[in-house]
Image (tube, rainbow, N blue to C red; front, side):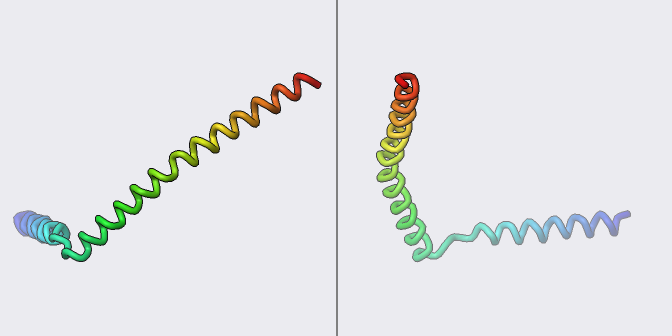
Length: 73
């Protein structure tokens, strides 16, 4: 029983060491690339909101026009 207990604890300890090395610091080039990509994504999302609003408003107006045109006939 003690042998099994020691194996389990050593496995957990080795897993913990592997996880701690997974959180190592990124190189400065990678950090700069992530920052640049994040800025580009923010710019694209900011430019996309007016387009989405106009498209949604257009769909609503077309639907209202079709509803009014069907009632007139």
